[in-house]
Each structure stands twice: as C-alpha cells, then as structure tokens.
Image (cartoon, rainbow, N blue to C red; front, side, top):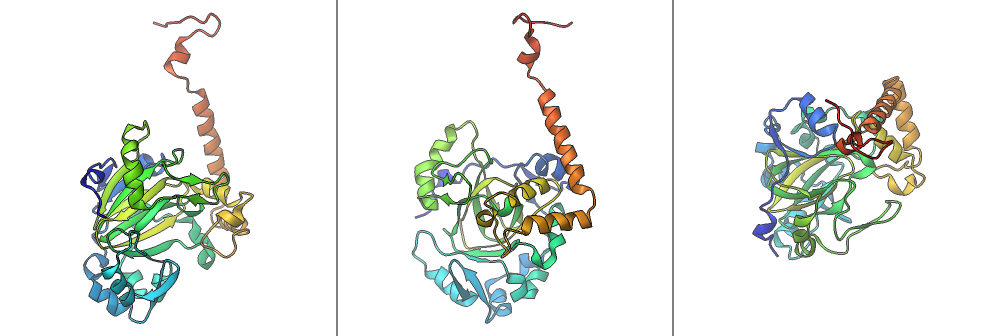
Length: 324
C-alpha cells in the first residue's frame, strides 16, 4: 500500500531557519512545542558521504540491530530492496558509533541540543543515539520517547511523514496502560491512517504534522506522542537528551514506583534516578533546587492569573464590576 495524497498535504508544524539558541529555548523547548529546523545540518559530512556504497564500505562485516535480529548492512539492504511486508523491519542501532567510528565523525549535535545533562553519567548513561535506516513504509507507530527525554531527528537521505499529539492527547487507536508501562496499538501504521487519520481533522487539539526531508531536523518535546513513516528509502540520526528545561520531568519519571518497568536503555533501571541526581548535584551544585524553586514560582503565577470573566464578576454580588 502507498500513502494517499490526502494524508500528506497537511503541514502544521512551525518551520524555522537561522533561529538563535535563545529563541529555540524560549519559543519551543520551554513551552514544549515541536518545531522543524531547516539549514542546521549543512556542516555535516554525512549529507554528502552517506551513499549506499560508502556505508557498505565503512561498515563491512559489522552487524546492526534490525528489529529482533542483527544483520550486516549489506544483508539488510538486500532485504529492504525486496520486502513485501506492510510494515518492513527497521535498522535502528544504538551502538553505531562504537561499531563504525567514522559514522560518528560524520555528524555533530546541532547547537540547539548541546546541553545534554545525561552526559554527567558518562558510560552509564542510557542509550541515547541511533542510526535509522529503512525502506518506504518502514517506521515507528505511536509512542512517547523513553525516560521523559526530548529528542531530535535529522534526515540525511529520504523523507519522513510525522504525526504528533501533545502529552495530554492520546492518539486514537492507541491504548496506554494505566501505569504507562505498556502501549498497545492494534493497527499498523497504514491501518491507522486508513481508520483514524480522517477523524483527527475535527478534533479541537489536532495533531502537529509535517514531512521532514533531507537536511531538516524535527524537535520532539518530551511526552509528545509521535508516529513516523518513511515515504522513501531513508537514513536518519536521532538523539534523546535532557536539558535543564526537562530535567525535573526526567527525575520524576526515573523515581516512579514502577521505574523497573518504565526506564529503558540501561541495565540499572532501579538505581538510575539516584545515580543521575547525585551526579547532577556534584557537577552542577544547586541546579536542581533552583529549577524546583522556579517551577514553584511559575505554578504560583499561573494560579494568580484569572480569566476575564472571573475578574469581571463580583464575588460578593454575583454581578459584574467595571473599572474605568
């Protein structure tokens, strides 16, 4: 099956080029809003180098994670060229820079995402970066990124269709468990578009959508549900990160009672919260307390804000009051 044209027309994401880091923080990261960034990968050697021939040469003999199995890139591309499945397997490897160091040298983290506080854990940090390769039709069904992190996804070759819902809006056809440990989506990506996509047009909180093409980056704020499908053979890099804007969310997530089921990307799920908090306190003394204080101040300010109608109604008489 192919994506229908009407599924590809909507482009509702903010697109920005040449934005400062300060603008990104204030307009998107702080308010937890997605954005598509243009023109920030121009220095990446990967954009020119990462042809099939080049990647086959530099990764010869190395095996990559492909769904539940491992295989060489050569074998995976043979599979991808001939796949008939509705949902092809995806090459999604977290150790690609260790396996092929040259691939790690062919890109750099865009300036907007360089504050990554999980870095204080060094080698003990959870998995955070992946190379993603897949044919048209491959992709990821609706999910929220691990450990309450935010993420960026940069397309090197190809194009990806994105559909994103804010944290408080569970996508239709998706059923998370009460504790958040499991998410069931009984339909494939294509079936979701066929059965549910049209209904979203009438929702008050409609999804954020876009097609991200080579050289572009999507910022996925923490907690946002997202579905991604490759429209053609695609190569991308994605990284999850923690900045001070979502540090408190991550710490809260890591100390949940069922952390042993929720936390991912590490073998030490239960102790990750304490290790991370202690490392932050040692590396950035006072940061957590300052962020907690700022969060309390913001919450108090929100409570003080009243709507026009609340300010216009006299609490004692139930009538209106006007000041001139």
